[in-house]
Amino acid sequence: MKKTLLSGVKPTGRPHIGNYFGAMKQFVDLAQSGEYDCYFFLADYHALNFIQDAEEMRRNSIDLALDYMAIGLDPAKVTLFKQSDISAHTELSCIFDAIVTMPYLMRAHAYKDAEAKNKEINVGTFNYPVLMAADILLYDTDVVPVGSDQKQHVEYARDIALKFNHIFKTELFKLPEPLILESVATVPGVDGRKMSKSYSNTIPLFASREEITKAVMGIVTDSGGPEAGGIPANVYAIHKLFRTEAELKALYDANKGKYKALKEALIEDIDAFVKPMRERRAELAKNEEAVIKVLAEGAKKADAKASKKLLEAKKAVGVL
Image 1: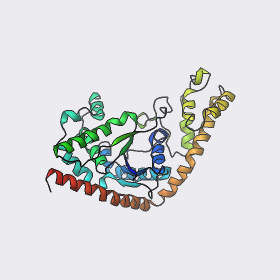
Image 2: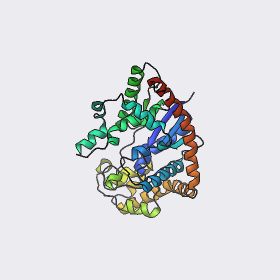
Image 3: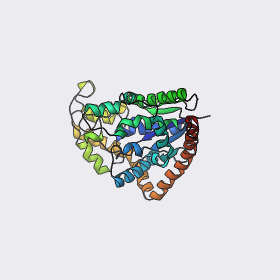
Image 4: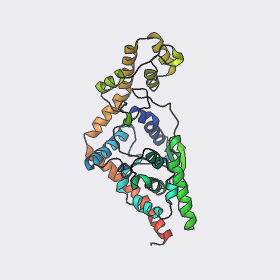
């Protein structure tokens, strides 16, 4: 039997090429491998900690579904759904709340980061590991694809499953394993820092030719590239995502010091790579009702599995 793979993505805005090469592409590769029964959900309840505008949330959710379908997630082969469409997520989280302690949750990275920034922390942020554990454990998940810095998410789910199973003398919840995504070099933004929406230094994944041109021409240049041979480091680092080292060596050797020419070559390569996905997304966006139908059908399949597991959990704790 195939193993079950699950991943949730928050609908918090437009993806960029760093998101694609860091995770999205690998999700598609895993789904196409044929090794896994894949569940991908739009984590809108998690996003509620950041987005508190109803129309923005609705728009972002549809956009994220479009994004994933455009890059190659096939709804005929994976289960794509919204977290909020499956009430079992929040109900199981409520059950877990009764066995999880506050000191334990205070060790979560997100909580510690918010605390370090002197933020007024809402309960959703504090409690998000519990909801995330429910997200994972409802589906008898075998593997959760994460970056190496996100292993704690899966560790919380494992700990909560173990504690529940011990307290209620059951083997109800399977212990998931992290599937560490094949790492890529940190994708730099146009200013040289890590590409991030919070830095406003991104190249959008589905950018138009004009947007790509504006972003690439704005890349901060220096001559600290490979072996400090007069190669613009930031331009080169992004270019490595689209061409082999051998191809780049020939191109950059032939254009030493010609930063404008190298940026123009990068524009051509990004646009050639993005264009098919951009066009597919535009075509899908013409029929948003079909996207909504995909999410509804995915929710129906996910709910059948999640509701069964929730029923077993309620019996285990004695509320049924």
